[in-house]
Image (tube, rainbow, N blue to C red; front, side):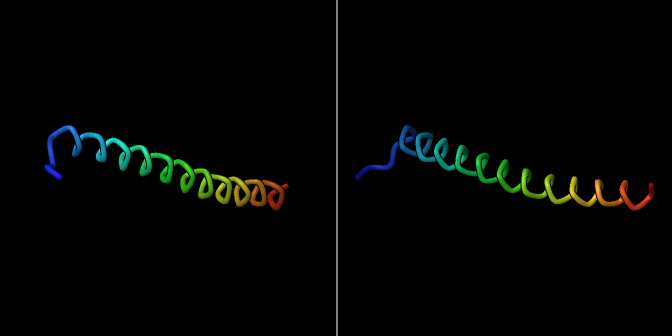
Length: 46
């Protein structure tokens, strides 16, 4: 199978999309954790 620029672009696009999705999920998890911490801090200050 010859590796053409098209195949590289195709697989590169899929890999890029997968990385974006993974990054979004990780960021959401981190954000939720941070938000919980912030809410706890606010409650303690009251």
